[in-house]
Amino acid sequence: MWTWYTSSADVGDTIISVRIRDGHHEPTSSYDLADFYEYTIVSPTSTPGSWSEVDSGTTNRLTCVWVASGSDVFAVGYDGAILHYKRSK
Image (tube, rainbow, N blue to C red; front, side, top):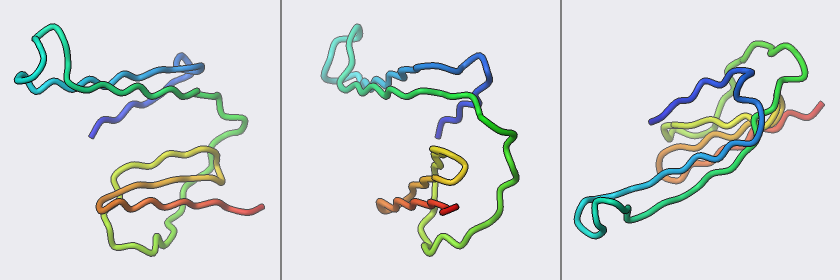
């Protein structure tokens, strides 16, 4: 698992490249598989509030959380679990 803690210096468009090489199929100067992830880091428009616990409705282990906004959150986990929480105002 990889964690990146962002700061105001990270605001803007970002591309992360992930490259995999097993050492058996491609030369040492290359890789077997690559993927690129593009996204935008934005400054918060308000002071973050506190988080509260919410029943997930699953017993699967959750491994990653993506927060699109304070009211729109995704979590993914084992066995293909994908949870989406969207708070209505």
